[in-house]
Length: 482
Image 1 (spheres, rainbow, N blue to C red):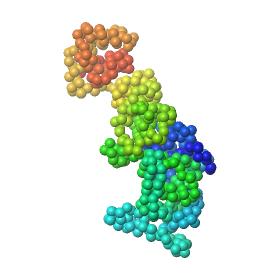
Image 2 (cartoon, rainbow, N blue to C red):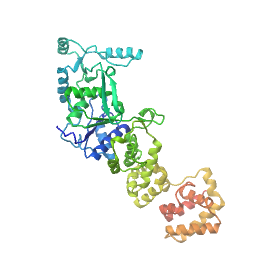
Image 3 (tube, rainbow, N blue to C red):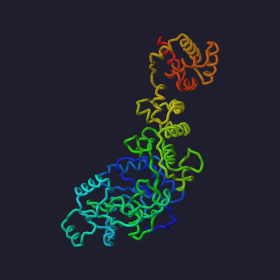
Image 4 (cartoon, rainbow, N blue to C red):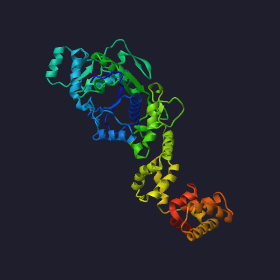
């Protein structure tokens, strides 16, 4: 497909190996934002050529996660498009035709080295503290020997014949000018013994055929660019713009990995991190806006995003900041929306939240104290379950002043069953005056009887949620502790 170079086309090309890494989400998001900012096209391509690592169902899960979080592709396996198929395992014939061109041009060659020989080679290089690279044993085999061994059915791979002299110099939007000595670049395997291509051949061929103009991906691919440039030039193709994103780091500045914490996007969604918060947080990992602002909707990010504001330095994945940001979104999103998203967590805990009006009131109170939705259950279950007092709490509800408070409230509320929030506010003032109490001496016993904790929501909110009947019942249960 021929595309005008002025038409921005970018791609996110994950491997279906189990889950969407937060680093993968960052790559997808930056590509998506750049496409939306420029009016370009965002392509989803599945790179499943490593069949041993592909996980059944991972493609569907990945696409579902992207949809849940709000990143929609313009072309891909789920929506189709003019450059399909968008799953690499369905494009083997395309790669075979292109690698044949490289073989005919002498840019690639067959390698018959066994895995055992290659492992011995790598081990020897490691002992000498040398880079682990192929030594070129099959690089200059005579053509008739290659033909004979292929006809005999001897297993082989196809490698790139990369030049050993000189330097490869290229531009990167983030790193600016980059130079790599060619002697440090390996003769990369392009086609494996199973006939599937490696990433290096497949992504170059697909990026060209799909008209990709900007390759936006993680910094770990920076060292592979010389191989890719050599392939582009061997085919006579125009280079895309390279944009390599900075590493994601743990707080100790080590590379973010699953061994040091949660890195699966699905896990964050399961725990009740909102898509809006995750996208906002991820966008600021390696990119900065024109000012010090930190809170952005996806629409605002699409307007603000620019490649020239991507940082070179690694970005720390600060869970404390994510918790703060997610808590902000929970407190500031539409209350009914938050209630809808919270409901499954209460139901999974076996709590009946069929009374919608009461449940929304519970969420309104609980969301002030949480950083993710799964925490709402512990902040709201006391409205649905009997309170169990600790020994220390039982001492407080047994005090004479506490009993006086409870008795007074029971009498007043039973005498006026049509109780309102205004009644609560008025009786707080009245009973504080009559009992000569103020501050925690008055509020702690009340809140403990109604909420199970001396700290928490204000008394009018508690009674509004519980209702007069349950409020009186809880005061009576507190008196029973004597």
